Image 1 (cartoon, rainbow, N blue to C red):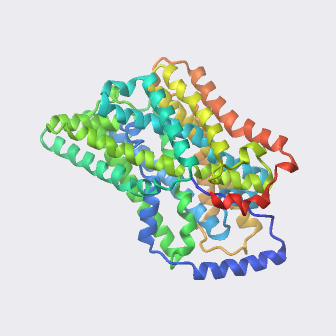
Image 2 (image 1 turned 90 degrees about the horizontal axis):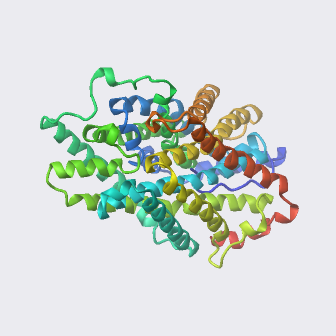
Image 3 (image 1 turned 30 degrees about the vertical axis):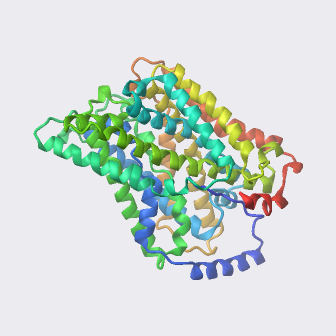
Length: 496
Protein backbone atom coordinates (compact mmCIF):
# COMPACT_ATOMS: atom_id res chain seq x y z
CA UNK A 1 0.00 0.00 0.00
CA UNK A 2 1.50 3.24 -1.06
CA UNK A 3 1.35 5.93 1.58
CA UNK A 4 1.58 8.92 -0.74
CA UNK A 5 0.17 9.05 -4.28
CA UNK A 6 0.32 12.53 -5.76
CA UNK A 7 -0.97 13.63 -9.14
CA UNK A 8 0.76 14.81 -12.24
CA UNK A 9 -0.44 18.22 -13.40
CA UNK A 10 -1.11 17.13 -16.97
CA UNK A 11 -0.09 14.69 -19.63
CA UNK A 12 3.34 15.39 -21.06
CA UNK A 13 3.64 17.28 -24.33
CA UNK A 14 6.47 16.20 -26.69
CA UNK A 15 8.68 19.09 -25.57
CA UNK A 16 7.95 18.64 -21.91
CA UNK A 17 8.48 14.88 -22.25
CA UNK A 18 11.99 15.50 -23.57
CA UNK A 19 12.77 17.91 -20.73
CA UNK A 20 11.22 15.56 -18.19
CA UNK A 21 13.28 12.70 -19.61
CA UNK A 22 16.57 14.55 -19.23
CA UNK A 23 15.62 15.71 -15.74
CA UNK A 24 14.63 12.16 -14.76
CA UNK A 25 17.93 10.81 -16.08
CA UNK A 26 19.89 13.36 -14.02
CA UNK A 27 17.78 12.62 -10.96
CA UNK A 28 18.46 8.90 -11.30
CA UNK A 29 22.20 9.51 -11.64
CA UNK A 30 22.37 11.89 -8.65
CA UNK A 31 20.04 10.01 -6.31
CA UNK A 32 21.56 8.80 -3.00
CA UNK A 33 22.58 5.16 -3.33
CA UNK A 34 21.52 2.26 -1.15
CA UNK A 35 22.55 -1.37 -1.14
CA UNK A 36 20.26 -4.07 -2.47
CA UNK A 37 20.38 -5.72 0.97
CA UNK A 38 18.98 -2.54 2.57
CA UNK A 39 16.13 -2.48 0.06
CA UNK A 40 15.45 -6.17 0.69
CA UNK A 41 15.16 -5.52 4.44
CA UNK A 42 12.92 -2.49 3.89
CA UNK A 43 10.64 -4.54 1.65
CA UNK A 44 10.52 -7.40 4.13
CA UNK A 45 9.61 -4.96 6.89
CA UNK A 46 6.74 -3.46 4.88
CA UNK A 47 5.23 -6.81 3.87
CA UNK A 48 5.93 -9.46 6.52
CA UNK A 49 3.62 -9.94 9.48
CA UNK A 50 2.47 -12.67 11.87
CA UNK A 51 -1.17 -11.59 11.63
CA UNK A 52 -2.05 -13.95 8.77
CA UNK A 53 -0.26 -16.98 10.27
CA UNK A 54 -3.37 -18.47 11.98
CA UNK A 55 -5.28 -18.23 8.69
CA UNK A 56 -2.83 -20.61 7.00
CA UNK A 57 -2.10 -22.71 10.09
CA UNK A 58 -5.56 -24.21 9.56
CA UNK A 59 -4.07 -26.10 6.60
CA UNK A 60 -1.03 -27.48 8.43
CA UNK A 61 1.80 -28.48 6.09
CA UNK A 62 -0.26 -27.38 3.07
CA UNK A 63 0.38 -23.80 4.23
CA UNK A 64 3.72 -24.05 2.41
CA UNK A 65 1.92 -24.59 -0.91
CA UNK A 66 -0.67 -21.92 -0.18
CA UNK A 67 2.03 -19.34 0.53
CA UNK A 68 4.43 -20.23 -2.29
CA UNK A 69 1.85 -20.17 -5.11
CA UNK A 70 0.68 -16.55 -4.59
CA UNK A 71 4.31 -15.53 -4.06
CA UNK A 72 5.17 -16.78 -7.56
CA UNK A 73 2.09 -15.53 -9.41
CA UNK A 74 1.44 -12.31 -7.48
CA UNK A 75 4.29 -11.22 -5.19
CA UNK A 76 7.05 -11.26 -7.81
CA UNK A 77 4.97 -9.79 -10.69
CA UNK A 78 3.84 -6.95 -8.41
CA UNK A 79 7.40 -6.20 -7.31
CA UNK A 80 8.92 -6.26 -10.79
CA UNK A 81 6.16 -4.29 -12.53
CA UNK A 82 5.91 -1.62 -9.84
CA UNK A 83 9.70 -1.21 -9.98
CA UNK A 84 9.56 -0.28 -13.66
CA UNK A 85 6.66 2.10 -13.13
CA UNK A 86 8.22 3.76 -10.08
CA UNK A 87 11.55 4.25 -11.84
CA UNK A 88 9.85 6.05 -14.75
CA UNK A 89 6.91 7.95 -13.26
CA UNK A 90 6.88 9.64 -9.87
CA UNK A 91 3.61 9.92 -7.97
CA UNK A 92 2.59 6.34 -7.28
CA UNK A 93 -0.34 4.36 -8.58
CA UNK A 94 -2.44 7.42 -9.47
CA UNK A 95 0.22 8.67 -11.88
CA UNK A 96 0.87 5.19 -13.32
CA UNK A 97 -2.79 4.45 -14.07
CA UNK A 98 -3.56 8.00 -15.20
CA UNK A 99 -0.67 7.96 -17.69
CA UNK A 100 -1.36 4.43 -18.89
CA UNK A 101 -5.16 4.42 -18.92
CA UNK A 102 -7.04 7.57 -17.85
CA UNK A 103 -7.37 10.01 -14.98
CA UNK A 104 -10.76 8.65 -13.83
CA UNK A 105 -9.24 5.17 -13.59
CA UNK A 106 -6.28 6.72 -11.81
CA UNK A 107 -8.71 8.11 -9.26
CA UNK A 108 -10.34 4.68 -8.97
CA UNK A 109 -6.92 3.16 -8.19
CA UNK A 110 -5.99 5.67 -5.49
CA UNK A 111 -9.54 5.55 -4.10
CA UNK A 112 -9.31 1.76 -3.72
CA UNK A 113 -5.98 2.16 -1.94
CA UNK A 114 -7.79 4.35 0.56
CA UNK A 115 -11.08 2.42 0.65
CA UNK A 116 -9.43 -0.90 1.49
CA UNK A 117 -8.32 0.60 4.82
CA UNK A 118 -11.98 0.99 5.80
CA UNK A 119 -12.13 -2.79 6.21
CA UNK A 120 -8.42 -3.30 6.87
CA UNK A 121 -8.37 -1.43 10.17
CA UNK A 122 -11.33 -3.32 11.71
CA UNK A 123 -9.67 -6.65 10.84
CA UNK A 124 -6.28 -5.45 12.15
CA UNK A 125 -7.81 -4.16 15.37
CA UNK A 126 -9.80 -7.38 15.81
CA UNK A 127 -6.43 -9.14 15.87
CA UNK A 128 -5.19 -6.57 18.40
CA UNK A 129 -8.33 -7.07 20.53
CA UNK A 130 -7.83 -10.84 20.65
CA UNK A 131 -4.18 -10.34 21.57
CA UNK A 132 -5.05 -7.93 24.38
CA UNK A 133 -7.52 -10.53 25.65
CA UNK A 134 -4.62 -12.83 26.54
CA UNK A 135 -3.39 -10.17 28.96
CA UNK A 136 -6.80 -9.67 30.57
CA UNK A 137 -8.98 -12.74 30.00
CA UNK A 138 -8.35 -15.21 27.12
CA UNK A 139 -12.07 -16.05 26.90
CA UNK A 140 -12.69 -12.52 25.60
CA UNK A 141 -10.78 -13.34 22.38
CA UNK A 142 -13.94 -14.87 20.91
CA UNK A 143 -16.34 -12.33 22.40
CA UNK A 144 -17.97 -10.20 19.70
CA UNK A 145 -19.11 -7.20 21.80
CA UNK A 146 -15.68 -6.98 23.46
CA UNK A 147 -13.99 -7.03 20.05
CA UNK A 148 -16.31 -4.32 18.72
CA UNK A 149 -15.65 -2.05 21.71
CA UNK A 150 -11.86 -2.43 21.42
CA UNK A 151 -11.95 -1.69 17.68
CA UNK A 152 -13.93 1.51 18.21
CA UNK A 153 -11.86 2.74 21.16
CA UNK A 154 -8.52 2.08 19.48
CA UNK A 155 -9.55 3.48 16.10
CA UNK A 156 -10.95 6.73 17.49
CA UNK A 157 -7.89 7.08 19.71
CA UNK A 158 -5.78 6.74 16.58
CA UNK A 159 -7.85 9.40 14.80
CA UNK A 160 -7.38 11.77 17.74
CA UNK A 161 -3.61 11.22 17.79
CA UNK A 162 -3.29 11.53 14.00
CA UNK A 163 -5.41 14.69 13.89
CA UNK A 164 -2.96 16.39 16.24
CA UNK A 165 -0.17 15.89 13.72
CA UNK A 166 2.09 14.08 16.15
CA UNK A 167 5.03 11.96 15.00
CA UNK A 168 5.51 10.34 18.39
CA UNK A 169 4.52 6.91 17.12
CA UNK A 170 6.91 6.86 14.14
CA UNK A 171 9.56 5.06 16.17
CA UNK A 172 7.04 2.39 17.20
CA UNK A 173 6.39 1.50 13.58
CA UNK A 174 10.06 1.45 12.61
CA UNK A 175 10.68 -1.12 15.33
CA UNK A 176 7.59 -3.10 14.36
CA UNK A 177 9.49 -5.68 12.30
CA UNK A 178 11.72 -6.52 15.26
CA UNK A 179 9.31 -6.14 18.18
CA UNK A 180 6.16 -7.58 16.67
CA UNK A 181 7.40 -9.92 13.95
CA UNK A 182 11.00 -11.18 14.07
CA UNK A 183 11.40 -11.78 17.82
CA UNK A 184 7.95 -13.37 18.36
CA UNK A 185 8.25 -15.29 15.07
CA UNK A 186 11.65 -16.78 15.88
CA UNK A 187 10.53 -17.57 19.44
CA UNK A 188 7.39 -19.28 18.18
CA UNK A 189 9.34 -21.46 15.73
CA UNK A 190 12.06 -22.36 18.26
CA UNK A 191 9.48 -23.34 20.88
CA UNK A 192 7.68 -25.42 18.28
CA UNK A 193 10.84 -27.27 17.23
CA UNK A 194 11.76 -28.00 20.85
CA UNK A 195 8.20 -29.13 21.48
CA UNK A 196 8.36 -31.63 18.61
CA UNK A 197 11.95 -32.59 19.47
CA UNK A 198 10.79 -33.77 22.88
CA UNK A 199 8.60 -36.35 21.22
CA UNK A 200 5.27 -34.54 21.33
CA UNK A 201 2.98 -35.26 18.36
CA UNK A 202 2.05 -32.45 15.99
CA UNK A 203 -1.59 -31.33 16.11
CA UNK A 204 -1.51 -31.29 12.29
CA UNK A 205 -0.09 -34.23 10.27
CA UNK A 206 3.34 -33.46 8.79
CA UNK A 207 3.69 -36.13 6.11
CA UNK A 208 4.40 -35.73 2.39
CA UNK A 209 0.77 -36.53 1.60
CA UNK A 210 -0.24 -33.35 3.44
CA UNK A 211 1.81 -30.99 1.27
CA UNK A 212 -1.24 -30.19 -0.87
CA UNK A 213 -4.52 -29.00 0.65
CA UNK A 214 -7.26 -31.59 0.75
CA UNK A 215 -9.60 -30.98 -2.16
CA UNK A 216 -13.20 -30.62 -0.99
CA UNK A 217 -14.27 -28.20 -3.69
CA UNK A 218 -13.37 -24.55 -4.18
CA UNK A 219 -13.95 -23.86 -0.49
CA UNK A 220 -10.78 -25.78 0.37
CA UNK A 221 -8.67 -23.16 -1.46
CA UNK A 222 -10.47 -20.02 -0.35
CA UNK A 223 -7.93 -19.09 2.32
CA UNK A 224 -5.32 -18.52 -0.38
CA UNK A 225 -7.11 -15.24 -1.18
CA UNK A 226 -6.01 -13.77 2.13
CA UNK A 227 -2.39 -14.31 1.09
CA UNK A 228 -2.72 -11.85 -1.77
CA UNK A 229 -3.36 -9.07 0.74
CA UNK A 230 -0.57 -10.44 2.94
CA UNK A 231 1.83 -9.87 0.05
CA UNK A 232 0.53 -6.42 -0.86
CA UNK A 233 2.89 -3.55 -0.25
CA UNK A 234 5.72 -4.62 -2.54
CA UNK A 235 4.99 -1.60 -4.72
CA UNK A 236 5.61 0.75 -1.80
CA UNK A 237 9.40 0.35 -1.85
CA UNK A 238 9.65 0.22 -5.65
CA UNK A 239 10.14 4.00 -5.50
CA UNK A 240 13.68 3.33 -4.27
CA UNK A 241 14.71 1.41 -7.39
CA UNK A 242 16.59 4.42 -8.76
CA UNK A 243 18.68 4.60 -5.59
CA UNK A 244 20.37 1.29 -6.38
CA UNK A 245 23.81 1.37 -7.99
CA UNK A 246 22.82 -1.15 -10.67
CA UNK A 247 19.00 -1.38 -10.73
CA UNK A 248 18.80 -3.93 -13.57
CA UNK A 249 20.79 -6.49 -11.55
CA UNK A 250 20.33 -5.43 -7.95
CA UNK A 251 16.57 -4.89 -7.87
CA UNK A 252 15.66 -8.47 -8.91
CA UNK A 253 18.26 -9.73 -6.42
CA UNK A 254 16.72 -7.57 -3.69
CA UNK A 255 13.19 -8.73 -4.51
CA UNK A 256 14.08 -12.42 -4.60
CA UNK A 257 15.87 -12.04 -1.25
CA UNK A 258 12.93 -10.15 0.27
CA UNK A 259 10.49 -12.72 -1.12
CA UNK A 260 12.49 -15.53 0.49
CA UNK A 261 12.56 -13.75 3.84
CA UNK A 262 8.86 -12.93 3.65
CA UNK A 263 8.05 -16.56 2.87
CA UNK A 264 10.06 -17.77 5.87
CA UNK A 265 8.37 -15.27 8.18
CA UNK A 266 4.95 -16.34 6.89
CA UNK A 267 5.44 -20.11 6.62
CA UNK A 268 7.46 -21.13 9.69
CA UNK A 269 5.24 -19.44 12.33
CA UNK A 270 2.14 -20.82 10.58
CA UNK A 271 3.60 -24.32 10.82
CA UNK A 272 4.56 -23.77 14.47
CA UNK A 273 0.97 -22.79 15.27
CA UNK A 274 -0.34 -25.89 13.49
CA UNK A 275 1.95 -28.10 15.58
CA UNK A 276 0.31 -27.13 18.87
CA UNK A 277 -3.24 -25.84 18.13
CA UNK A 278 -5.70 -28.22 16.40
CA UNK A 279 -7.35 -26.57 13.38
CA UNK A 280 -10.81 -27.15 14.84
CA UNK A 281 -9.89 -24.99 17.83
CA UNK A 282 -7.92 -22.31 15.99
CA UNK A 283 -9.13 -18.71 16.04
CA UNK A 284 -8.25 -16.61 13.01
CA UNK A 285 -7.77 -13.57 15.23
CA UNK A 286 -6.24 -15.12 18.34
CA UNK A 287 -4.33 -18.03 16.77
CA UNK A 288 -0.89 -16.52 17.39
CA UNK A 289 -1.61 -16.04 21.08
CA UNK A 290 -3.26 -19.47 21.31
CA UNK A 291 0.00 -21.02 20.14
CA UNK A 292 2.18 -18.91 22.44
CA UNK A 293 -0.08 -19.64 25.40
CA UNK A 294 0.03 -23.40 24.70
CA UNK A 295 3.83 -23.41 24.37
CA UNK A 296 4.35 -21.25 27.46
CA UNK A 297 2.06 -23.43 29.55
CA UNK A 298 3.86 -26.58 28.35
CA UNK A 299 7.29 -25.14 29.21
CA UNK A 300 5.98 -23.64 32.49
CA UNK A 301 6.77 -20.04 31.52
CA UNK A 302 3.21 -18.77 31.38
CA UNK A 303 4.32 -15.36 32.68
CA UNK A 304 5.66 -14.64 29.18
CA UNK A 305 2.18 -14.69 27.62
CA UNK A 306 1.28 -11.09 28.51
CA UNK A 307 4.81 -9.94 27.57
CA UNK A 308 4.46 -11.31 24.03
CA UNK A 309 0.90 -9.95 23.82
CA UNK A 310 2.10 -6.43 24.68
CA UNK A 311 4.88 -6.65 22.05
CA UNK A 312 2.44 -7.75 19.34
CA UNK A 313 -0.08 -5.07 20.28
CA UNK A 314 2.55 -2.30 20.37
CA UNK A 315 3.85 -3.21 16.93
CA UNK A 316 0.36 -3.44 15.42
CA UNK A 317 -0.79 -0.13 16.88
CA UNK A 318 2.41 1.59 15.78
CA UNK A 319 1.81 0.40 12.23
CA UNK A 320 -1.84 1.45 12.33
CA UNK A 321 -1.05 4.95 13.57
CA UNK A 322 1.69 5.46 11.00
CA UNK A 323 -0.51 4.31 8.11
CA UNK A 324 -3.77 5.86 9.32
CA UNK A 325 -3.26 9.18 7.55
CA UNK A 326 -1.17 7.92 4.61
CA UNK A 327 -3.70 6.71 2.02
CA UNK A 328 -6.14 9.46 2.97
CA UNK A 329 -3.42 12.10 2.45
CA UNK A 330 -2.70 10.73 -1.03
CA UNK A 331 -6.42 10.84 -1.83
CA UNK A 332 -6.62 14.40 -0.51
CA UNK A 333 -3.76 15.69 -2.66
CA UNK A 334 -5.03 14.30 -5.96
CA UNK A 335 -8.58 15.40 -5.09
CA UNK A 336 -7.45 18.98 -4.55
CA UNK A 337 -5.64 18.90 -7.87
CA UNK A 338 -8.52 17.41 -9.86
CA UNK A 339 -11.59 18.16 -7.70
CA UNK A 340 -12.57 14.55 -6.96
CA UNK A 341 -13.84 15.11 -3.40
CA UNK A 342 -16.30 17.72 -2.07
CA UNK A 343 -14.76 20.66 -0.17
CA UNK A 344 -15.94 19.28 3.19
CA UNK A 345 -13.66 16.26 2.82
CA UNK A 346 -10.76 18.40 1.60
CA UNK A 347 -10.66 20.66 4.65
CA UNK A 348 -7.65 20.51 6.97
CA UNK A 349 -7.49 21.24 10.68
CA UNK A 350 -5.04 23.75 12.15
CA UNK A 351 -2.32 21.09 12.23
CA UNK A 352 -2.73 20.57 8.48
CA UNK A 353 -4.30 17.11 8.86
CA UNK A 354 -7.25 15.90 6.75
CA UNK A 355 -9.40 15.43 9.85
CA UNK A 356 -12.77 15.34 8.07
CA UNK A 357 -11.69 12.37 5.95
CA UNK A 358 -10.43 10.53 9.04
CA UNK A 359 -13.63 11.23 10.98
CA UNK A 360 -15.86 10.16 8.08
CA UNK A 361 -13.81 6.98 7.74
CA UNK A 362 -14.16 6.50 11.50
CA UNK A 363 -17.95 6.61 11.33
CA UNK A 364 -17.93 3.83 8.73
CA UNK A 365 -15.35 1.88 10.74
CA UNK A 366 -17.60 2.12 13.80
CA UNK A 367 -20.52 0.64 11.86
CA UNK A 368 -18.29 -2.19 10.62
CA UNK A 369 -16.98 -2.79 14.14
CA UNK A 370 -20.52 -3.34 15.37
CA UNK A 371 -20.78 -6.29 12.97
CA UNK A 372 -18.34 -8.14 15.21
CA UNK A 373 -20.98 -8.02 17.92
CA UNK A 374 -23.72 -9.50 15.73
CA UNK A 375 -22.08 -11.98 13.35
CA UNK A 376 -22.03 -15.62 14.56
CA UNK A 377 -18.40 -15.55 15.69
CA UNK A 378 -15.36 -13.27 15.63
CA UNK A 379 -13.40 -15.47 13.21
CA UNK A 380 -16.23 -15.30 10.66
CA UNK A 381 -16.36 -11.50 10.85
CA UNK A 382 -12.57 -11.26 10.66
CA UNK A 383 -12.45 -13.44 7.55
CA UNK A 384 -15.31 -11.69 5.75
CA UNK A 385 -13.77 -8.24 6.28
CA UNK A 386 -10.32 -9.52 5.28
CA UNK A 387 -11.80 -10.82 2.01
CA UNK A 388 -13.55 -7.51 1.28
CA UNK A 389 -10.28 -5.70 1.96
CA UNK A 390 -8.48 -7.98 -0.48
CA UNK A 391 -11.17 -7.65 -3.15
CA UNK A 392 -11.06 -3.85 -3.10
CA UNK A 393 -7.26 -3.73 -3.10
CA UNK A 394 -7.02 -6.19 -6.00
CA UNK A 395 -8.69 -3.56 -8.21
CA UNK A 396 -5.54 -1.46 -7.78
CA UNK A 397 -3.34 -4.28 -9.03
CA UNK A 398 -5.60 -5.14 -11.97
CA UNK A 399 -5.37 -1.52 -13.12
CA UNK A 400 -1.62 -1.38 -12.48
CA UNK A 401 -0.83 -4.45 -14.61
CA UNK A 402 -2.91 -3.16 -17.55
CA UNK A 403 -1.38 0.33 -17.27
CA UNK A 404 2.15 -1.10 -17.28
CA UNK A 405 1.55 -2.92 -20.59
CA UNK A 406 0.04 0.19 -22.18
CA UNK A 407 2.87 2.43 -21.00
CA UNK A 408 5.49 0.06 -22.43
CA UNK A 409 3.66 0.24 -25.79
CA UNK A 410 2.63 3.92 -25.87
CA UNK A 411 5.74 5.38 -24.22
CA UNK A 412 8.54 2.91 -25.03
CA UNK A 413 11.22 5.62 -25.00
CA UNK A 414 10.20 7.18 -21.70
CA UNK A 415 13.26 6.94 -19.40
CA UNK A 416 13.06 4.13 -16.87
CA UNK A 417 15.65 3.26 -14.27
CA UNK A 418 14.58 -0.38 -14.46
CA UNK A 419 12.83 -2.48 -17.09
CA UNK A 420 11.01 -5.59 -15.93
CA UNK A 421 11.93 -8.72 -17.90
CA UNK A 422 9.16 -10.25 -20.04
CA UNK A 423 6.85 -7.43 -18.96
CA UNK A 424 3.77 -8.60 -20.87
CA UNK A 425 4.03 -12.16 -19.55
CA UNK A 426 4.69 -10.85 -16.02
CA UNK A 427 1.68 -8.51 -16.18
CA UNK A 428 -0.62 -11.17 -17.63
CA UNK A 429 0.43 -13.59 -14.88
CA UNK A 430 -0.24 -11.02 -12.17
CA UNK A 431 -3.53 -9.92 -13.75
CA UNK A 432 -4.88 -13.46 -14.12
CA UNK A 433 -3.81 -14.35 -10.58
CA UNK A 434 -5.48 -11.23 -9.18
CA UNK A 435 -8.68 -11.87 -11.15
CA UNK A 436 -8.73 -15.51 -10.01
CA UNK A 437 -8.27 -14.40 -6.40
CA UNK A 438 -11.25 -12.09 -6.81
CA UNK A 439 -13.44 -14.92 -8.07
CA UNK A 440 -12.32 -17.35 -5.35
CA UNK A 441 -12.99 -14.68 -2.74
CA UNK A 442 -16.73 -15.14 -3.34
CA UNK A 443 -16.57 -18.78 -2.24
CA UNK A 444 -17.13 -19.16 1.53
CA UNK A 445 -14.36 -20.90 3.43
CA UNK A 446 -15.07 -24.46 4.55
CA UNK A 447 -14.67 -23.16 8.11
CA UNK A 448 -18.04 -21.45 7.97
CA UNK A 449 -19.91 -24.72 8.22
CA UNK A 450 -23.61 -24.38 7.48
CA UNK A 451 -23.64 -20.61 7.19
CA UNK A 452 -25.64 -19.17 4.31
CA UNK A 453 -23.57 -19.03 1.12
CA UNK A 454 -25.78 -16.32 -0.34
CA UNK A 455 -25.47 -14.11 2.73
CA UNK A 456 -21.68 -14.43 2.49
CA UNK A 457 -21.70 -13.59 -1.24
CA UNK A 458 -24.05 -10.66 -0.62
CA UNK A 459 -21.78 -9.19 2.08
CA UNK A 460 -18.56 -9.62 0.10
CA UNK A 461 -20.11 -8.60 -3.23
CA UNK A 462 -21.93 -5.69 -1.66
CA UNK A 463 -18.77 -4.43 0.01
CA UNK A 464 -16.81 -4.69 -3.24
CA UNK A 465 -19.55 -3.06 -5.33
CA UNK A 466 -20.15 -0.23 -2.88
CA UNK A 467 -16.52 0.65 -2.16
CA UNK A 468 -14.93 -0.28 -5.48
CA UNK A 469 -17.59 0.93 -7.95
CA UNK A 470 -20.56 2.92 -6.64
CA UNK A 471 -18.83 5.45 -4.37
CA UNK A 472 -15.95 6.35 -6.75
CA UNK A 473 -18.45 6.59 -9.64
CA UNK A 474 -20.60 9.02 -7.65
CA UNK A 475 -17.59 11.17 -6.78
CA UNK A 476 -16.60 11.33 -10.44
CA UNK A 477 -20.17 11.90 -11.63
CA UNK A 478 -21.00 14.64 -9.12
CA UNK A 479 -17.70 16.52 -9.00
CA UNK A 480 -17.72 20.23 -9.83
CA UNK A 481 -15.01 22.64 -11.04
CA UNK A 482 -15.32 24.49 -7.73
CA UNK A 483 -14.04 21.39 -5.90
CA UNK A 484 -10.55 21.93 -7.31
CA UNK A 485 -8.14 23.55 -4.83
CA UNK A 486 -4.70 23.13 -6.44
CA UNK A 487 -3.38 26.41 -5.08
CA UNK A 488 -3.84 25.18 -1.49
CA UNK A 489 -1.64 22.13 -1.98
CA UNK A 490 1.44 24.32 -1.77
CA UNK A 491 0.38 25.88 1.51
CA UNK A 492 -1.96 23.93 3.75
CA UNK A 493 -1.16 20.57 2.18
CA UNK A 494 2.54 20.86 2.93
CA UNK A 495 1.83 21.42 6.59
CA UNK A 496 0.49 17.93 6.87
